[in-house]
Structure formats: structure tokens, C-alpha cells
Length: 274
Image (spheres, rainbow, N blue to C red):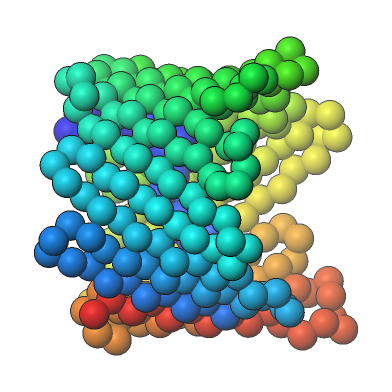
């Protein structure tokens, strides 16, 4: 991306990923089969409690066009066609799901050296409109997003935020939930192997504060250990091991100190890439 500002959805992403990414408390299996011909396959299965969800995803790339087709266990067929650089610095994506004839959506993205704009419009008689934009640079970015439901003629969301990115830390401040919540996040690379992150939310209507803190430590080039603690008394730990190139096994556990009669949550995820 060079010196371009990040899209609005990436503000605070570093801290969010450290605190939430790959914490799966179920049984998940992923098989990815790449191909030199441009056609790749991805099969995913997830069992949580007594519910099993699975899908098969095929991705075909040719030049600046990518076609992504996914079939899930409920016989829904989702298709997404992405085209890059139709015009300079642009990306367009058309997506729809069968048999839902109202699921069509068109996404457009434009990247400028000092701005990033993302827009989305539903392809139905009463579409949902979404727009986000940021200005600035790779280090300092300011932006906002809005969502408008034409069916009810009302705004479903509006958010504003600012992000600061340095080589060893990133900080973000968001006014979210239609101005009802202030969210602050911070991630700091203590050294090349260890990072810490924190996220705090203040709700103006209830004067309620909540926070989550976490850490990530690279034990060796193939092993990652993460921890997470929230103000609600929940403590989680994650162990991830790359047991062969690009193939991961992840074990997650979470203990709720306020639910002493409940067993800790456990999760196992295996990702294979031949």
C-alpha cells in the first residue's frame, strides 16, 4: 500500500486482531488447495456445540479478475467477482447469493496517495448504502463511515475515527455506535517477539466502561502463544503451531471466573495447506 492511508475498516485492526483473531471455541478444520493454473479450492468445516457448518470455496484468478464461488451446507451458492484496476487505483466487486435474489451487492474502492474511499450499494429495490473514507498518510489517518437504509430512510450507523501508526506501536480512537460509544485501542511491539494490546470502550448512555488486554509472544519461528483478559473476568489463552509449512494447529481455551459451575471453553482448529 506504500504511503497510502489505510481503509477505514483497518483503523485499530492491529489491536483487534491480537485480541480476537483465531480464538475459536469449537472444532474447525480448513483445507486449502492452491493451483498454479489459477484455480484454488478451500474447504471449511466448523462444529460448535451441536451445530455443524461447512462450505466449499473455489477461487479462480485470471489477470485482474478473481471469481470466488462458495457452496455451504444449506445449499446456498455465493458468488463474488472482483476486478482490479478497471480504472487506475480502483477495485470493483459484484457479489450475490442464490437463492436469495435480494442479496446482490456492488462494492467499489478507490485508493489515492492521500485518501481511501470504499462504497457499497445493495442491488435491490430498497438498497442498503454504505460509504467510508479516510484521508492522511500511512502514519496518520482520519476518517468516518455511514450506513443508510433506504427502506426505512434512516441511518443504521455512523462512525468517526483517527489512527496513528508507528513502526513499534499503533493507536486508534473511534466514536462508534451512532456516537453512543468511545473506543480506544493500542498495540505495542515490546520487541521482535512480543506484543501487547489493550482496548477500552466507554458508553455515554450508561457511563459503563469495559476493557480487554492481551499479549502475543513468538516462542520460536513456528510457535505463537497469546493471552487475553477482559474486565468481565474472562481469561483466554491460545497456542498456535506451524507443524508444516503454511499448515497450522491452534488450541484455544477460555475460563469465565463468574461462571464457576461451567467448564472452560475449549477449541481446536486445524488448517492444512499441501
